Image 1 (tube, rainbow, N blue to C red):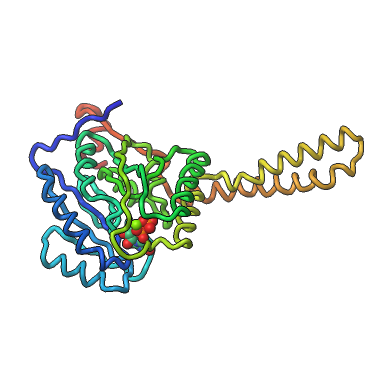
Image 2 (image 1 turned 60 degrees about the vertical axis):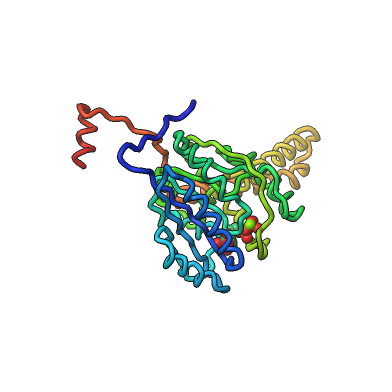
Amino acid sequence: MLPEKRVFDDRRPLLSVVVPCYNESEVLPHTHARLTRVLASLVGFECELIYVDDGSTDGTWDLISSLTRTSATVRALKLSRNFGHQRACLAGLREATGDAVAIIDADLQDPPELIGEMAALWSDGWSVVSARRRARSGETLFKKASAYAFYRLLNALSDQPHALDTGDFRLVDRTVVELLTAIPEKDLYLRGIVSWFGLPETSVAYDRSPRHSGESKYTLRKMLSLARHGLLGDSAALLRLPVYLGSAALAYGVTATVARRDLRKFAGPGAFGAQALALGVMGEYVHAVHRQLQGRPAYVVEERITSVSHPVAVKERVGL
Ligand code: UDP
Ligand code: MG
C-alpha cells in the first residue's frame, strides 16, 4: 500500500544530513562542496548539515569547525575519541533536528546527488528510504563477497527481513529518529533496527563509486564487530545452535540405543546431545535477558488517529 503524501502548509520541511567522519580531511572539502550544491538545489526544503568527527587525528576537526564559521547551516560534533561509525551516526541523529534525516558517508562513495530522490520519496510518505548498492566499484573482492554473503546470512537468520545490500546511506523520517534515539542499546546495528521497526520502507538503487581519496576506515576488526552486533542484535540463531545440534545428537543416541539394544550406544552422541540441549536452554534464558536489556520498545505504533470527541484523545491532549 502506498503511504500518504506529507503536507507542510505553513513552512518548508527541514532536512538534516548527518556525515560521520574519521580522518577524512583529504576528501571533506570535496564532500562539502558537493553536498552544499545538492542541498541548495532542494528548493522545497530547509537544510542543515551535521558533521560528526569520530575522534580524527588528521585535522578533520579543524576543517569541520572552519565550515561552521562560513556556513550557517553547518553544525559540528566532535566525539572525544574514535567510537566507531555506528555510534558516530547515532550521535549525529541525536543532534539532528530535521523532519527528515539522511545519513551519508564522508568519502563520496555514496553520491550526495541521490539525496534529492530520497527526499522526494520521503515527501511521498515513506518513513525509510534506503539506498541499495547495485554495483560496488573500487572495493576489494573480499569486501564485496563478504558483504554479499553477510547480508544474505543475516536475512536468513533474522526474525525480521532486512533491506538487502544497503549500508547506512539512507533517509529516515523524524519518527524513526525518535525511536532510534530512545533505545538504550549501546551497540546498535542501525540498518537492522530501522528494518526491525517495520515502518513503510522503500529504496533507490545506485552504483557505489570508489572512495574519493584516502583508505577505508572500516578495518577488518571493525567489520567483524559490526557483523557481530548485527547478528547478536537481530537474531537468536547462534544462541539456538546447541538446541538444534543437541536435539539431533540426542535423537541419534536414543535411536542407536533402541535399535541395537545396547545402552553403551547412548554414551557418545546421546551424552553430547543432552549437554548441548542443556546449554541451549541456558541460551534461551540468556536471550530473554539480552532482549530485556536491549530495551527496544515492545512495539512501534506507525500512526495514531484520535478524534477530539473521544475521551482518550481528550486525556492525551490535556496530558493526563
Ligand atoms: N567512519 C567513522 N568512524 C570509524 C570508521 C569510519 O566515522 O571508526 C566513517 C568514515 O569516515 C566514513 C564512513 O564512516 O564517512 C564509512 O567508512 P569507510 O568509508 O571507511 O568504510 P567503507 O566504505 O570502506 O566500508
Ligand atoms: Mg567508504
